[in-house]
Each structure stands twice: as structure tokens, then as C-alpha cells.
Length: 77
Image 1 (tube, one colour):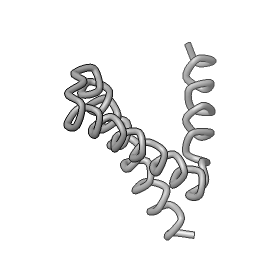
Image 2: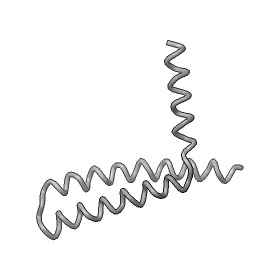
Image 3: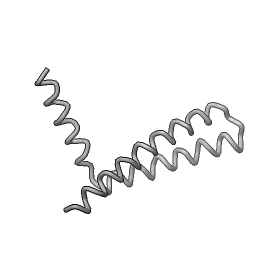
Image 4: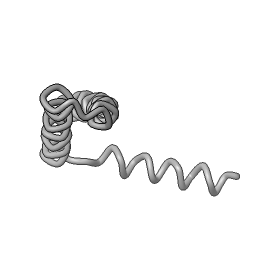
């Protein structure tokens, strides 16, 4: 069990070491995905696009939380 928790800690540390630039690229890409899917829903009435747009908003939320965390860490340096 101790081995598993140390592996998770290492994995978590690797996730927090993501650079601001990489994070911004991911955020912008996900926002573009949301725009495309939302437009398909509103303009073309594609119901499946609505589900994809909602999924994209959840991913954007996660990325923005990560951005906030990384930004705070960077400001402490």
C-alpha cells in the first residue's frame, strides 16, 4: 500500500509540473472545441454536439482550476 501511495504522489507531482504555456495551449484548444460543438448545436440543431459541448465545458473547468493552481505556484517563486 505504501508503494501505491508513493507512486500516486509522484504522479501528482508530475501533473503539477505542467508549464503555463502548455496549459494555455490546452485551454485554448478546448475552448475552440466548445465553440465548434456549440455552433453545431445552435446553428444545425445537432443534439449530439450539445453533449460534446457540455463535456468540453467540464474539461475547461478542470483546466482553469489547474491554471489557477499553477499560476499561484509561479507567483510564489
